[in-house]
Amino acid sequence: MNSLYGDQEAGRKAAELIDSLVPYFNIIEAGLVDQFKKCPVRDEQGLVLIQLHFKVMEALKMHLNSVVATGKMAEIDLSKVENSNV
Image 1 (tube, one colour):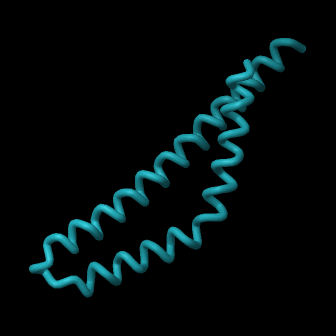
Image 2: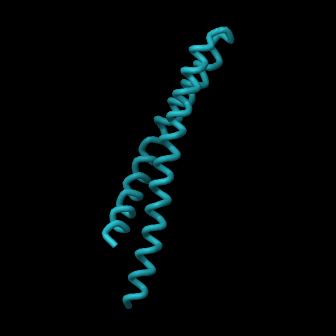
Image 3: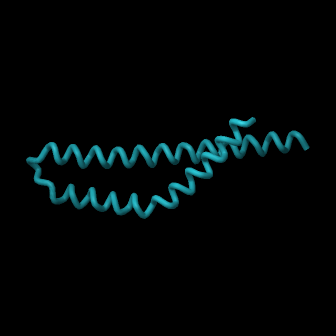
């Protein structure tokens, strides 16, 4: 049961973090697109680096969204437990 409360709290914090980071994600993504457009086709290392940065950002978003989803599931489970105790 403590794990559910922990998951719920982590989900809440992750949702707040996502909300606060959205403008920065947008700035970073726009910068990466701009770098991609300016990068010469022959610059394979530069293109790979841009792609790596984009993938790391996407992985971070996916992880945070996963924590939020786990928190929502914990909230549902806690609600079920509380309703069964009434």
